[in-house]
Image (tube, rainbow over all chains, first blue to last red; front, side, top):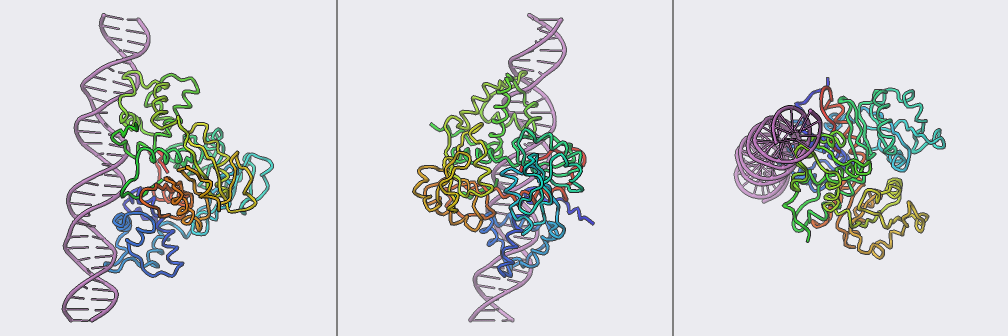
Length: 219
Length: 219
DNA sequence: CCAAGTATGTGAAATCTTTAACGACTAACG
DNA sequence: CGTTAGTCGTTAAAGATTTCACATACTTGG
């Protein structure tokens, strides 16, 4: 099927997982209804933006009432493909990689790290966070049909590994190295650069003083 | 002084550290000049966007030539306050916190993690990545005049610690917990949510297929 | 010193995103 | 039932960001 729903704006798409997680919390707490205003306070996104975001998917709420948590949640579950789990590989079991492996992703998530790779012989064969660590030399052989990779290797190795991932048929890479890797146009790369995030925060603090009213914003 | 330079757009501000780092690389490689096109290939940002970004700071380049690496770099050094180092505290020496502590921030950076805090008695007193670990109970006492904090604690502890940080006079928090913390409007919080980043990537892969031409974008 | 080539800086257009405002409808209570 | 308070979905406006396209001015080589 795959309803190509006239394209949700990217800005909206990035907020969906946030909404989903919070709705999940509400549901766990036994809450039956929620208003855009309540959600707004919790996730720090303007309530009009939330209503607009939801409206891209049709009329999910009821005027004068709000949104039914159960219904909204089940709708998002479908939309975010929470039913089927996406299998993920992690490359580079250093500090950051270990953090990921120990993070319990599958709890609120449709993603599961199934396999990890590292170049360090001492780590190969061990288990970290319940995930087996394979040798990086066996990448192509053991990757199987996994289509998403988390890249937490030293930046000098990033492009080389990325090339191999691409050849092995990966379609998305979450790149935590400072290197801006080059990939064919049919592979999606999202960069998260910790040093840059920190520097950007410092820059904003110095040049965009928050005096009176102003909410905090995104990454 | 603090030249309140008629406010650079936020989107531009977020790219500055990226530009800076790459210019630094070029300089190290002994390169003397660079064009917006070359920079574009390297940092994966449209060349017109780069020229526009730079132009907010005045005419930094020369027509027909490009940009002088040395000059551009020294300009950015001033602009990004690379001269003075910003002192940072890290709260929560778990896997992710350890990754940060071992990350050599000061290399290309104006930021340095000076002190870390943790609740685990076994970690207190030790050194991780050259940074001493203090007990979280001593937070207020030992924070001094540090104004930026990296929050890598369990999400259940996030709001409580954030409140204490605020009381202790912090002005910026880089929040890696899934919790959306509430702070006074004069404190800036940037959220980086690893689970959400992964989910967003998966969502984009399924709903925004990259077929022909299309570049990858930001976190 | 000129001609050809190159690359900036920017006006204008296009695109994307957020926010305000409000009509329409619901729930709840007296 | 009728009235009040509450909340959505959406139109329209405002704001932010990206991109195009080109006049302008510099560089380079002859």
